[in-house]
Image (cartoon, rainbow, N blue to C red; front, side):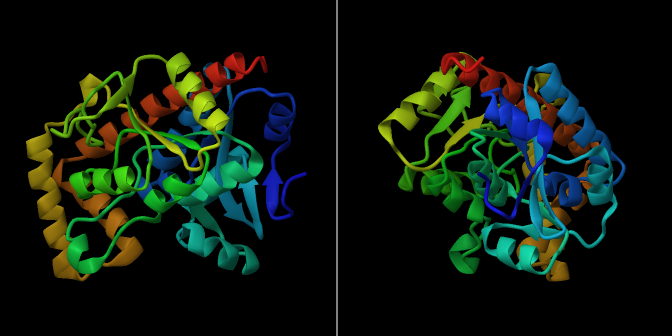
Length: 308
């Protein structure tokens, strides 16, 4: 039985009941991370990649007083075009549901919903983290707290490059979140393959990741696993050059007084403009790359558990 506020689409419900691989997908990237029509085009490509990889996609969003686990094409388009969709983290879910608001789930709330539905693997673009200047603003993403509490494996291209990456890594270490490099021993910086920050743990195959997930589950350790998957080489952007672009975008945000949840969408839009659209192309490709890996891990986890 699912909680009453969970609307699990039939395809996802059947896959879960039969022990077939399911991959959770967030919706903030649709409503707030990319402009229309690139957002809906990317969302549809993402779902097809999941299917091609042998798993069932479960894009998550809040609509009509329920958390939808899986969206129809019409629902994806509706969310992609909406100008009033809330950006929902943990604290926002009860209000959005009670008020029948349209909402897109962040990494944190997608993890919560996936765990409620029994989905173990989730692929996204990049996670939130400790913001630059957090020693003054205390601006730390709820994504990090959720990773320390919720038993979902998150596959991403690292924390978003607009963040303070060293502080984000320190936070994850303090709260016991394993950060696993996929085919890398250096933390990817979202748009860039390299950040200069070494990783202590890495794996080279979906099968190894599945074994790691099962081992953690067997130990009864709470919290998630963060898998960092570098952007494909063809779309890699120079780290030092991107730092200059990000600083320019941050200055623009400060000058305009942008704060809170509005910061990340503003910065991503500004970075796109400053890079003549190259950052958006890289963003799309890293998402597709992460989803492909996510589907492979979901399949490997089912094979290892003798579910398929």
